[in-house]
Amino acid sequence: MKRLAFEGVLFAGGPGRRWACVKVPAFVPGLFGRRGRVPVNGTVNGVVFRAEIHAGADGGYFVVVPRAARVAAGAATGDRVAITLEVAAAAGSRSTPEVPAAN
Image 1 (cartoon, helix red, strand yellow):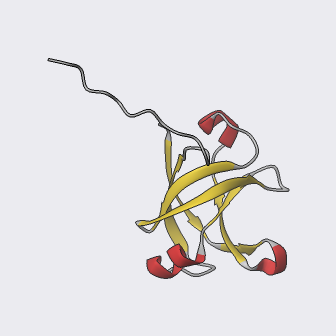
Image 2 (cartoon, rainbow, N blue to C red):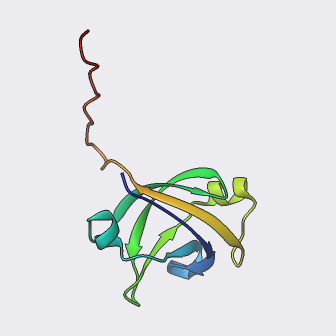
């Protein structure tokens, strides 16, 4: 599974500028093979979160970092943070566990 690690600055965005977002410095469809909203598992300064990558009006991509993860990471709007992202299984999908080979 492809994983993206980078640093970015949290910025205020969304309705009423209540979201804390980070620009994703990659072409998401080329990296993750998907367009539109991409569900991801991620970390902010080592704190785990689940979110979606969104396409921005500027042609780039961003991810909204959930409040609980920001608080636990001690991060606020304007702070530089370490981010990791990888595609999450789509909601409602089921993965098939690997069955070990018989001896």
